[in-house]
Length: 136
Image (tube, rainbow, N blue to C red; front, side, top):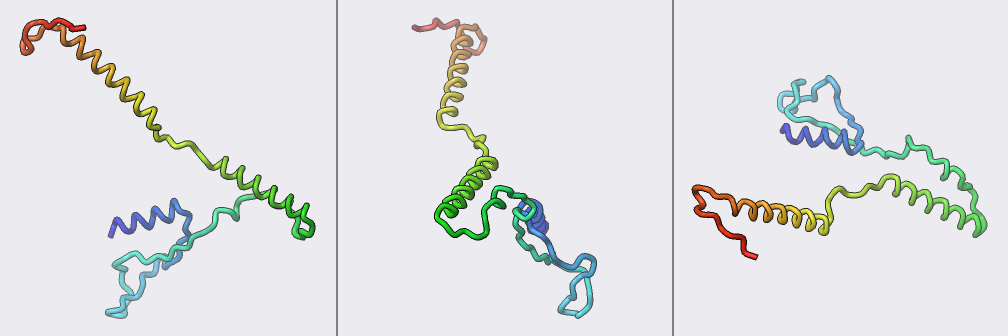
């Protein structure tokens, strides 16, 4: 049950939901018709919009009465520009490396490992045996 409550709390905190439900009064237990502590968390989640608190002066400049084709073109252009601006402002580049970056990183790691192995192959070690020559 704890996991389900954590999921609800995540939804309330991160997905902008309002909660509605009894605050201090426990719900009625149907079996005994007495007010007892609830066995589960009964909440009503209502999704809310993020736009009511946002001021959009660009959209306020669009007239309410649009009659000519020029006014239609102006309104469509203003709306399109505003949407493009909002998307650009809210977008971010993914931190996930591309395939080429992964290849370069692994290649550098592999080259460093191979160089270290070549250097270590010339060191005499009791378990390895005699010094080996580097073949070219």
